[in-house]
Amino acid sequence: MIFSFLKLRSLRKQAMECFEVIQTKRKFREDLLSAADLKSVLAFEERYQIVKQSKLESDYAAFISDADLLFQNYFPSSHNEWVFENVESFLVAIVVALSIKCYFLQPFVIPTDSMKPTLYGVQIEHRTGETPGFFEQAYQKVIFGKSYKRFIAPEDLTLAGYRVGSFTPWFQYADFIFTNGETKRLWLPMEAVKKSGLHRDQFFRKGEDILNLEVESGDFVLVDKMTIHFRLPKRAEVFVFTTKGIEGIEKDFPMRGILGSQYYIKRCVGVPHDTLRIEEPHLFVNGKRIDDNPMVTKVQAAKEGYRGYTSNLPGINFLATPQETYQLATDRFWAMGDNSYNSFDSRGWGPVPRENLVGTGFVAFWPFGKRWGWIK
Image (cartoon, rainbow, N blue to C red; front, side, top):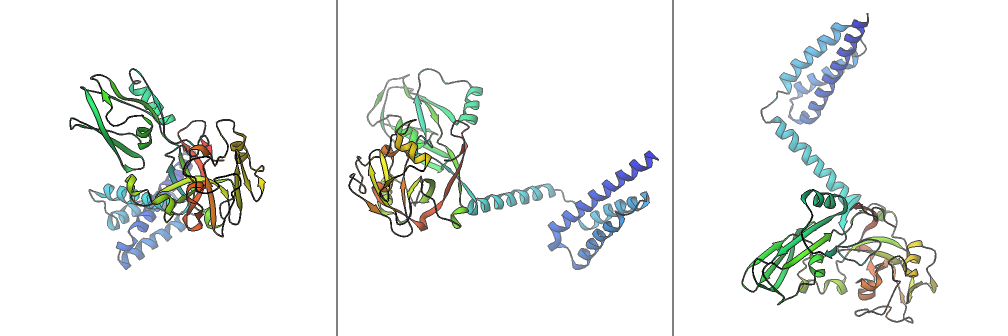
């Protein structure tokens, strides 16, 4: 009795698996089947709905046998079938990923320190001596985004300069050019090179470190692109926008070797029709100091790594004195970095148009350090 029950249960499971495989194959190849073949396959799928109500082993055994025959007749396996199926799955995954990127979430990497200490750009630390071993480097890279770059002068060399470039935002390099005509390429972020302190005509003796750096990647963040279609950024939210058409930003791009527009991430401290003013270290909106937002309050408190808001910097064209105000027009937003003393933002080039908005900061997903988690 028990043996018969177990056997019937096993046959039911096999019959269900046969039905699911045939149904899946039919959905993948429906456009390749003739009308007659498609009708036969659909009829067989309907047969399963009747068979699964049966309590006879013979009904399930017959269904399984006929399923095998149908599969061989209508869905014969080819030698390279696994290749096509995997390629198809890969393409579907790409389409899904692109759809998510276009409409829901998009990853960005923070290149500079303009939002520090809320979000970090590339950080470097000068080292002496040998770099850590392979396993230690792998652990530091995966968990904390740290990599180690060391370049020892093979002979007496004088640096003529360097070029930076990238294949993607995640694969950046620097070509170091020396006066003897030699060039050395290192894979490291552009910001790391800028912060390294290297300069033209710098001389290095044979065996001396040209570079010996611990490089920490800038924070990788996900930006919510969906919410922006239903509501505009709120005051004090972190948001991302493109520089397209913002003359004060893009006018210097050709001289810096930058082609096309860029993405910037700042904090939205002013929304349409706000009137802003800076009186160090505070930011005033509509005549009142912002005290109802914990992050803006933290910046103004000039504690925990924050320094407050300033207007006393070179290159500031707006809100340059404590008396100067700026009123935002309709569909215009004011962007400022939390690191006000080291941020190229709306104080230099004015408001961000609504059409430039990309989304709001959602989560810092890598590295797995103290800033990992929701963006405040």
